Length: 94
Image (cartoon, rainbow, N blue to C red):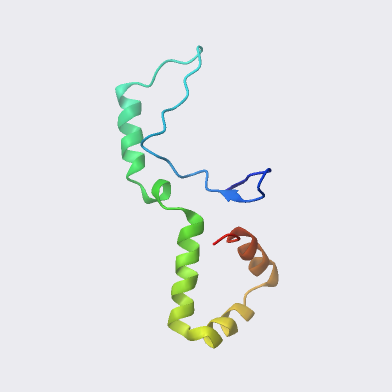
């Protein structure tokens, strides 16, 4: 994740889009067929398709629904306070 200095929010830098074309400078050669195949394969990998923020939010929400509000709060009280703070910052905006 990288932090956007203007908004203070985090961006998942692992996400890829099939619409994104790599920027080629004059010093670089255009992508080969092998490069294109690698990108198409990488686009099928969940690490490049699923937002980490969305994934963590959904998993925490599922635990909350499964345990109920009190059970989830009891569980979260056992988590280190620094981790909870980091999770709250990371999930800010969800």
